[in-house]
Amino acid sequence: MGWNSWNKFACDVSERLIRETADAMVSSGLQAAGYQYVNIDDCWQVSRDAGGTIVADSSRFPSGIRALADDVHRKGLKLGIYTDAGTLTCEKRPGSLNHETQDMKTYAAWGVDYVKVDWCHAEGLDPEVQYAKFRDAIAGAGRPIVFSICNWGVKAPWRWGAATGNLWRTTGDIGDTFDRMSVIGFSQNGLEKFSGPGHWNDPDMLEVGNGGMNRNEYRTHMGLWALLAAPLLAGNDLRTMTAETKEILTNPEVIAVDQDKRGVQGHRVGQEGPLEVWVRPLADGSQAVGLFNRGEGATNITLEFKAIGLSSPVKLRDLWERKELGTFQSSYTGEVPQHGVVLLRVSK
Image (cartoon, rainbow, N blue to C red; front, top):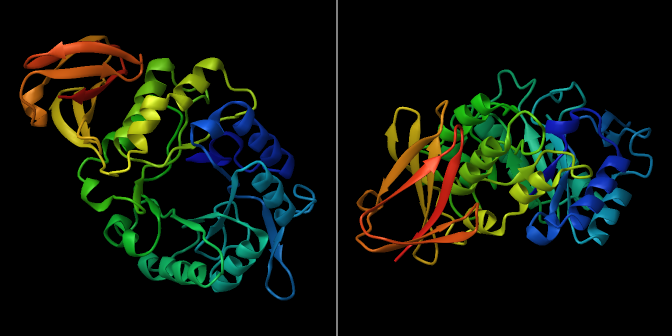
């Protein structure tokens, strides 16, 4: 759980932005809710020195990454950074090809806690081979670093990612629209067998609060990611977010589903046109269930308890509304708004 600069700020990154974001993560309550990584994406780097060491943009990061990491650590947070497996990053800054070991040692010396490795300008390279170089470089760097593989699903990283990194992107980039978020999120069905504690499918970062979707759509986004056991990396401006955005990002019951210690990724158990039912088994024996309406008007969706392996009666709690719904016998029917979700915890 954490934050990444790309979705909102793209190339406009600076140490001031990172410091202010870290402050906002603490003051807004996101840190208390479990968010801890403050991740710089592309455009922080400009060149390599005569010895090949990566050089940060001195105009945007005048204090250097080491000092910035120290500041972030003093707040009880962790710092992430970005590079690319190819010759150049996506924004044509220096990539890490043939500098994997050197770069990971540099990041470790700077106090970096997380590294995202992209896949631009990597023509002719085998991701399974190239990302293993970063894995080995991190192992020898002398500091625990979370390794995020960002090759957009090329060569099915879910099949080899668990032996290489901690999380791997399964798709192309997300966008701040309901259609794009839906295409990415609902396409994760079938990948659940590859995910588990310490190695996660990553359907990309959150767009919650960036303005392209409404409240119901952002609830669908956050709720689906929670059912998917997906990394939760906020992508909005934490310094200016609304109370509504904060409520979605910090709902403790939704976060508890995402962070459930059993680490099982959810899957779809029912679909009828634009209506979908997803379930995720949880460590305490209960199940999280999402009733999703991808259609263009409010509609009722029925959950048959036998579809998730339960006999009557069962108890239901609405996680977004944070209220008990009561005990039900064989099924539950809820009205789900257009592009919305009813997110339930189902228990005996």
